Structure formats: structure tokens, C-alpha cells
Length: 290
Length: 238
Image (cartoon, each protein chain N blue to C red):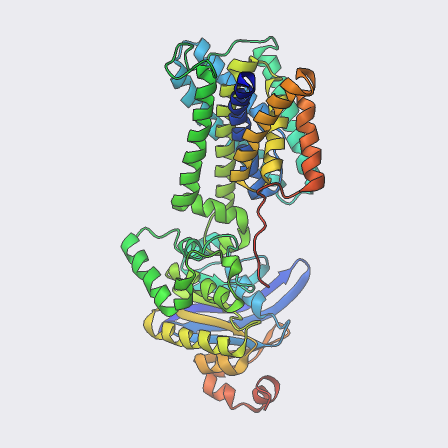
């Protein structure tokens, strides 16, 4: 029984990371109806930047915030320079560009930073007051960080005018433009936010899986499964789905399929959701009267 | 009276298909002008052309003495042209109040915004009852009211109204036009109204233009248009 609870707790910690990355995927999906396959590699690259800053002698939190802001700017710039010119391109071209970005980030990271495994520090020290026998301080901290991001985003999108206009631009670009909302700028902001959230997810997962160019590949698949389970167009669903995938992955890995087949669980979930319930558990079905 | 909008030799096309073949149209300050015509005459296209929305145009458009060709849809909206598009364009999964707040996203005068919001609820009490409801769950008439109120929240100088009567029951149409009459008396807003329902449009408007297959074939004061034989036969069914 105790191992069960422990496995659930561990699952929640990785679930927090999946939830963050899933949220980043959903944000871009809502606005553009594209899944950014490069999201994970962009997060990995951000984490390498943070690692470099820490190596250069910066404190953890200074490196953390510089990385988040830098990722925001870089991600917005990618939207502006690469994605925006494609807004009338066919679906498949955009997918190809996303995969191209994935490969580019992966290779450039290997080229610049090397491919060996590196240790990445956790900001939550081993003897912090809040860890316990059940969960390590880093796991508690990860869940806490994930919940903070969720709360901050929720407040932003619900209660600020900028958040409201971003939602409007994603939902109905035509009407938004007639109201004077700069849709292109909103998209760029959305990309920036997604990049910043991804960076946080990367920095939270790196202490657990070690830092290397391939560290986010699996995480992205879990996150994608989380987003799909929750409903790819629903931010709340992405969070719930992310946590759910984290727990399921751990429980099934421990008791049923073994560690080697953990990633298969995520892939089975993806295929299962697409077959049985494509809208996801919380997928939005807008009520519409005609 | 000063001239608010002056359109000269306006051509508009979707891709290679030209829909407007050079129209002239004026809106004076404080006026309600209606653009009448059958389905496919180019009424909606005219409004879109004024906002550079989804169409390509040629010709000149002068708004408050300033040429607006080459400006983006967003810039034109920011200059005070409120557009209530065909199909209403409400944000379906957002609440009524969020829709209204989007109408005034660029305004910084918070106190005036609050007053305006109350005024909208006063014009359209139905919206007040449903302020927290998803816009997609509203009836067609309520959505039309929401679209008009949302545009007015932006404090426009010129309001472009695209077939507010479309698909609505006659009683609802009567309601909406009664409110429009009140709005034109109380707000300093000029209106360019596109309608298929000529009878009700001529009751509200000062001037009317008749559009046929992309050309203005007749224009004049509403009174004269109402008594014009051709208009009566073709558009009033008399």
C-alpha cells in the first residue's frame, strides 16, 4: 500500500511537468490548430541555456528567470520569422516545418553543448523542510511550480484585457480584427508564453532525467498524451490530462508493464483517446444554436 | 453638416472576381444611410471593402478627411469605425460580458467604460439577464443585439451594420430597430446600414442608396426613395 501511494506521488510530480508542456502545446493549438512538435526540443534548448548560465556562475533563480524571459523572446521570434509567413500554407507544410525545427534544435544542441549526460541542479535542496518519506523536495517543488504556472495563466487569461484579447484572437480571428485586435501580435505573444512555460518544464525535468539533447523526446510524448486526454483545445483538460498521464505511467510501469514499456503506455493512450473519444475527457464542445 | 465618409469609384473583388464596379457613397455626420439591394448585389462587400476585410479594393475612401486606403483592418477599427459583420461574429464560447469587454479592449477610460456597459444593458435588457451566459447559447436576436452592443462599446464614430434583420422573426426585427432609433438619438454615432428589408431600413435612414449587381443605380432621401415607383415595385412589394 505504501509503495502504491508513493508511486502515485511520484507520478504526480512528473505529471506536473507533463501538464506544463501539455499546456504549452494547447496554447499554440488553440490559436493555430497546429501541434508544435518542436515544443519539447525548444524546452531542452532553453534548459541548456540555463545550464550554461549556471556554469558561468549565476545563481539558480537568476539563471531561471533569464532563461524564461529569453525563451519567451526567442519563441516569439520563431513565430514571427518562421511560422507567420506560413499562415496560408497547407497543413502538411506546417507539420514539416515543425519537424524541421525539432531536428534543428536537437542537432544544434548536440553540436553546441555536446551529447553527454549532464547533471542539472534542482532549486529545492535535499534537506528542505517540505520533503518527506513520500516525496523528495524536488518532487514537491515541481508540483508546486506547475500549480503556480497554472494559477498565473488562469488569472491572466480570465482577468486581464490582454488575456481576453488573446483568447478572442485565437477563437475568432476575423471578428477580432474588426474590433481592432492585432491578431498577429496576439499569436506571437501566445508563442512566447508557450516557449516560456516549456522552458520551466525543461528546467524541472532536467534534475530527474539528466540534461542531454534527447531528454525531452519522451516528455513531449507524455505531454501530448496528456493534452489529448484532456482535450487538445482545453487548457484545464491539458493540466488534468498531464497529471493523469504522470500517475498512470508510474502505476502501470510499476505494477503492470514494467519500466521498459512505460512510453508505450503513453502511445497506447494517444491511440486509445483518438479512437474512443477524440474530443478528450474535457474537450470543449461549444454549445451552438443555429 | 460635415462629411464623415466619402467613397469614390470604389471597386472591390474577391480574388479575380470583381463584385463592386465603382461606387460613390457619402455619409454625413450624424446621418443614418442605408444601402439597399437584393442578395448578391454587393452590400456586404461594400462594408468589407470599407474595412479592408477579406476583399481587395481600388478607388478612394476618405474618412474624417483622411484617406484610408492601405490601412489594415485593425487600424481602421481603431480609427472609430465599428463593424457589425454579417453572421454577427460573436465569440461563441465566451460570456456576453466578455464579448462586450472585447468591444472596448483598446479603451483606457475605465469609468466611462463602466457607464457605457450599463447603457448597453439599458438598451438591451435581455443581454443583462444573460450577461454570464455563453454567447453561443443566445438566440439569433440576442446575438444580433450583442454584436451591436459590442461594436458600440468601442465608441465608434461610424457604425457599419450588416443586415441586422437577417434570419430573425419580424417582431424581433421591430424590437432591434426600435432600439436602433433610440441609439441614434442618444449616441453621437453615424450609421451605414445594409439591409434587404427595405421597408424597415427606410424608416430608420435619412438617405438611401440602391445597389444592383455592384453599381449604385439610385440614391436620394429616404422619403423620396420610398415613393419611387421602381423601388416600390422591386423592394417594397407594392
